[in-house]
Image 1: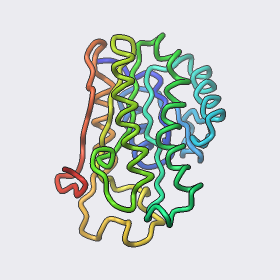
Image 2: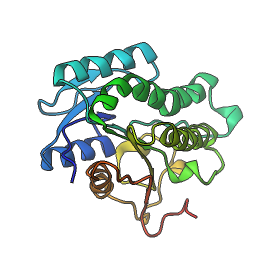
Image 3: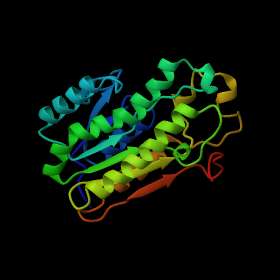
Image 4: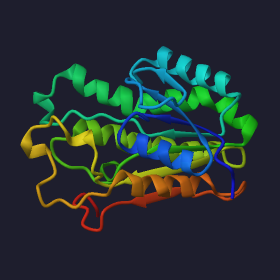
Amino acid sequence: MRPLGNTLITGGASGLGAAVAKSVVAEGGRPLIIDRTRPPGDLPFAQADLADRAATEAAVHDLARQAGGLDAVVNAAGIDACGPLEDVPADEWENVIRVNLLGTAAVVRAALPHLRQSAGTIIDCASTLGLRAVSDATAYCAAKFGVVGFTRALAAELAGQVGVTLLIPGGMDTAFFHGRPEQYRPGPDAKLNPPEHVARAVVFALRQPPGCEVRELMICPSRESSWP
């Protein structure tokens, strides 16, 4: 299996990103974290808001330079703004697109020269709501549908050069749902996946040998309400 090496992870201070970082360490790799807040411990870290393209690009280049290159990128960062379209302030709505979709593209664009050198791997995190739309989630669905299309096109563009995996997770038990109005939180009986379970699937995709790729990986709780 492929060694993990230097794995850049966005959103690596919490949630799925933090779980991926922990799994990468356990498998002998070196996580490089981009987030708005510093993660615990002493992992290599660059602070950036993915809504800021220049800061995002600088963070990718800084971490790659410090580490001596990149072997993989896991785009795990994401935000949401719930509510009917006319009730969500336009700036908040558009920021979901900037972070979830444009931020993902900015990270990939900046990382590509390094990944071409290592014949590395990209994993972009979409969502089951990138396949099935629901009410009061227009920003999130638009962004995640965009990540699905972007990543599928990227896989065709980079075939034979850089590995590309589209990750489609369902609901996870993370702080992603904190701070929302009650109607936009999972119910008390919701069965969500621990992010550690999803992280192990991410590492499985990263460790495929050269020339073998997991193109798309859907992983969700068995009672996932947004699938099918």
